[in-house]
Length: 187
Image (tube, rainbow, N blue to C red; front, side, top):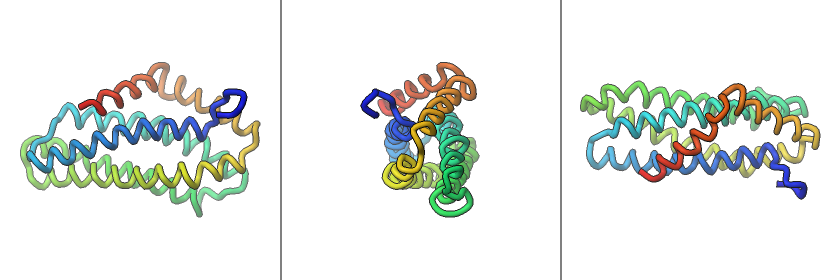
């Protein structure tokens, strides 16, 4: 936050990371429970997948991919090499891991041991990937962005982020996923 009370786009993304990390903690507890019991709590995993797909990916990653990374590219950082290429690759890898977990869920619920392992592997891989990814963004990429973006860029991005939340994902959806994150963290 600046002196004027303006939350920078990278600070907003860091704040969203805190919410995502709460859900990753909850996912780890579920992975441990699955390993101990051999049982999957369907409702919990479905809510977890919903959060990951619609908050972490469709909202948070969309802000990065369609807005922040594009603006950084306009300021000279290439999209197809270096830090931005790594972040984009990791977003795709995260989507692959989430899909693998989701694809395994129906059979895992029926007791298929391979599917149960695939579900655990997909979730655990996603948790590990996202924890490392968030560390890179918070400690390396976002400070780089803050140095290279102008005050006007920051204002434009903040407005674009607001449009992502209200127009692209829909009014109230962002808040819905904040509540879901709190719910998952309590389970």
